[in-house]
Image 1 (tube, rainbow, N blue to C red):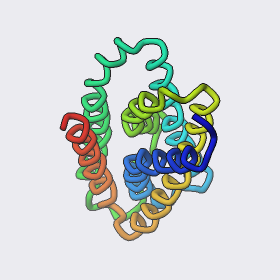
Image 2 (cartoon, rainbow, N blue to C red):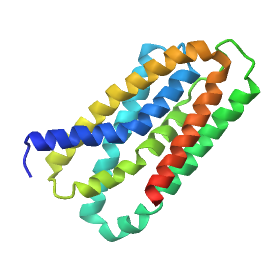
Image 3 (cartoon, helix red, strand yellow):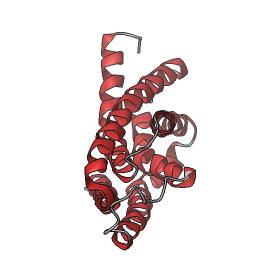
Image 4 (tube, rainbow, N blue to C red):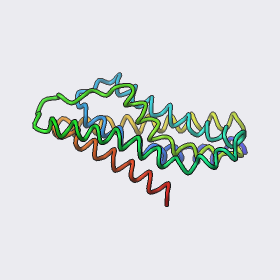
Length: 195
């Protein structure tokens, strides 16, 4: 394999495809916190980009070191994503229902632990990308992962921005909608992985 146009286009396509779940979660995060500051937006997008870059590298390492063990673990990926997103989405939904009549910005702020769980849940399927890139050398895998991270960052920033715009109008209902979005994403990742 070489660094050619096909390599870069493939990495951008992987990044775009992998970032769709993170985009939806970013949208939900923006809905839940319409007054989020730019620094926090960058932090959230950066965290998602980090995990989207890390998972293909881990998948690539597994392919080169622990092939048999990784194959047996791969079937649990959809279950892990489902459980994590159902937990976060369910918690957000319950909080939203408790505060549904609140018209102020009284929703809970995102915690770092919640964001890390979201980052892992939305990127765990990217482990399999590293498996498909088994023919890459280490330098190519790192460059591809950096491209995936950059694409994810841009897409997540867009998701947060859009969510913030709508969240201002939805006020107290935003947490309910955000929780539903996370639950639907968890189910979608699960069904895609199982089928």
